[in-house]
Amino acid sequence: MTRKLKLTAIGNSTGVVLPRELLDKLRVQRGDELMVLETPDGITLTPFNPEFAAQMEVAEKVMRRRRNLLRKLAE
Image (cartoon, rainbow, N blue to C red; front, top):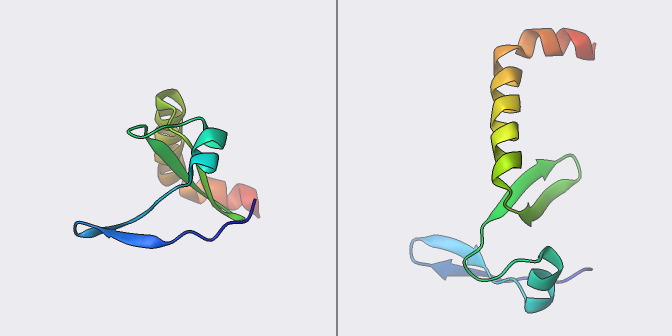
């Protein structure tokens, strides 16, 4: 799906209105939370999953703490 979305002012922030079709594909509705993931291919939106968010937080802590080791492994 390719669709142009417009950014709009929401108070002091900027937001984007997601069309109903996209909300249905994500299986979310007004008031739900989304997870924003930065990937090599761009940005991915997924429904918020608290278990996955907790796992990602642990992974990020490990990556920060062991960054030198991970850098060596990547060589």
